[in-house]
Length: 189
View (spheres, rainbow, N blue to C red):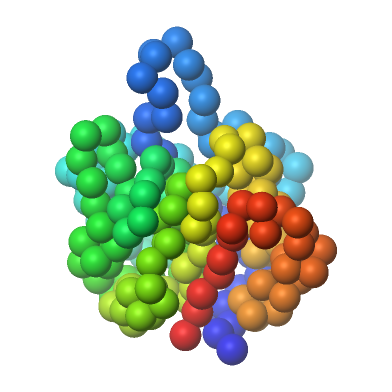
């Protein structure tokens, strides 16, 4: 089983634009603010609208001063093997190249539709290349509210577990219906 070094895990969140209508203010930031105010979980939040900004912020995240921000929460539109940034697409392999082996003791959470709906060997390659503690996300299409609520539960539960296998067991037991309906999955080596 893979174990985290710490219980306390802060969040590094990169979010894309959800809607084409600029009047729509949908954002996962409100969920992160809720977690900070109620559970003391700190976060860094940045919006990414293109691959260049994604690469820039991921490079910044690698700096030692952000070592306690060990949950990378990627909130974008997605499809199998892809996160979407405006009109641009990034595959899991391309994302792994951007991250390099900088994810030791870090969690990568895809708050996206279907991005990790891929063969297990692709997820294992991503884990090996990035050295991430675990990768999790949704294999199906998700509703924004349902996904945001589950993401809050998940991030808060990551604070209580070092062993990601035990966390997966807990989520599968106590939130079985949500896990099944959202097609949530968590992988580790």
